[in-house]
Length: 117
Image 1 (cartoon, rainbow, N blue to C red):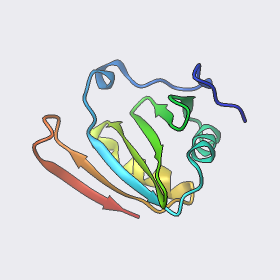
Image 2 (image 1 turned 90 degrees about the vertical axis):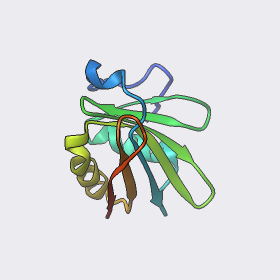
Image 3 (image 1 turned 60 degrees about the vertical axis):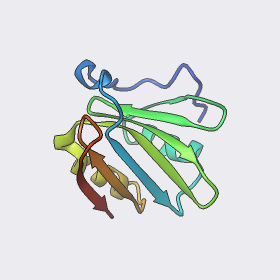
């Protein structure tokens, strides 16, 4: 599957979330490459686009995360509707991925939740 900077068809992040700063940060240990991860999200009904030579952005109406490579794991950061952070965890689990993530307040001053699966 080719994922270009123009993106694949699929849902776009809701406007009220698109104006927010990042509030979710996480890691995916022992995950496949970020390109393979992006393809997995597309097959699960998400939109994806190549955001650089090495990174991919995946989005749905309620979340938009940047998938970043690192030597031993994959990292992600982005915006999630706070009331749906558990749903993001469920999506990752349904994709067969181990994860840990943090949900932060809008002002980045308080850690609201830590999740792992």
